[in-house]
Image (cartoon, rainbow, N blue to C red):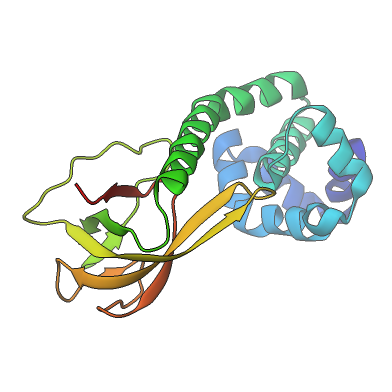
Length: 216
């Protein structure tokens, strides 16, 4: 961690350091995510390029590269301003942020596994999707963690009906999915996950966050 911070202290000009340190902390970190953040993640974290740095974060219980780069950027800003780095507090804040999301994801995975076991090849299936019209186009979407709750609107949302043709399960990635031969879509001129779908298409649907029902 110290070496990561020292890297920028050595590489940056006095003007660059002054520009970064004079910004409010949150603004400095947020605005740097698509520049310095990408540099940190691509040069040091992705593909385990700096295993020592990665191991240091993993020991702290931080496993997301975006969170790792955020801690480095925050610590750099505090170091330049002669403030305590408070790594432990940064880590605790990140863990608190992820706690409800991880619980939500675990519940979503459990429901996905239950639905996977419920359907067999040849079964009828109905898939319920919310339609988003934010960009003047109609696109069927999922609601992911932490906000998975939504109310289906039979007048405006989409139902995809079809037959299950294959089942796929990946224990390593905790992915379960069903391939469905579509028989009907209730909403015309609507993409599904930004893809065009039509009756007779065979489409693989991952079950996490997917609202499905079998034949009554």
